[in-house]
Length: 236
Image 1 (cartoon, rainbow, N blue to C red):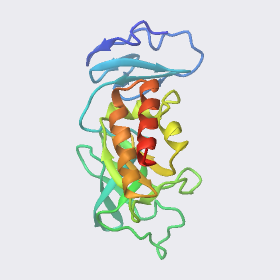
Image 2: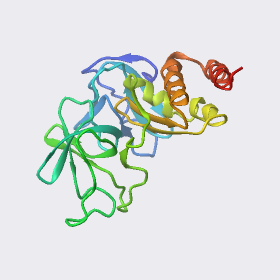
Image 3: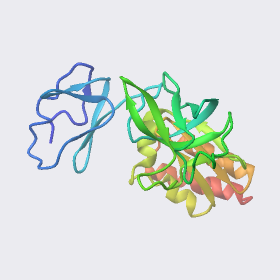
C-alpha cells in the first residue's frame, strides 16, 4: 500500500512507490494521476485515494469536468454538425457523438436526437491530442441504458464532481434507502450531472434535494433524512 494514500498531494509530486508496489495486479491510474515513462506523477491537487484491488485516483474539489475515457456522463446536445452531434458535457470543449453510436442506428435508420436533448453516454475517446468522442452503446452494440433521456419529464441537477464518487460508492446508502419507499429513475454522470424522475413532481424535487443535502452526511444522517422526507411526503 502506498504510504501517501489518504494524504494531500500536489501537482508534479512523484508517487515513487506506486509502480513498485508488491501487488501482482496491474495498477489502474484514475483521474488526477498520469504515468510518465517509469514515474507516476500527480496532475491535480487533492487527496490520494485507493480502491481494492488496484485503483488509485485523486479526490479533489473541481468545478469543471475533465473528460476521462470510459466515464459515463450526461450531456446536452447543442447542435448537429454533419454526421455528428455536438454535446456539452461541462468540460472545456464540446464532445462529438456520431449518429451511428446508438443501438440499431444505420445510415437509413438515424436516431431521433434534437438540440436540447439530454443524452446518457460514455467517452470512447478522451485525451489531449484528439477531439473527445462519445457513444451511446456498449462493446456489444447494445444501449445498456445509454441514450436520450428526460423527454417525458424528470429533473437535471448539478452536484460537485467529487460527490459523485461518494454517491456511487457501494458503502453509500442513499439510493438504496430512497428505493425502499419511493419509485424513481436516476442517471448519474461522472461530470456531476444527475437526472432524476419519480412518479410526481413533488417526489422528484424531494429526491433531488436529498441528493444535494447528502454530500456531507454520514450514512446514519442520510437514513434519518430519508425517513423524515418519506414521512413528509406521506402527509405525516
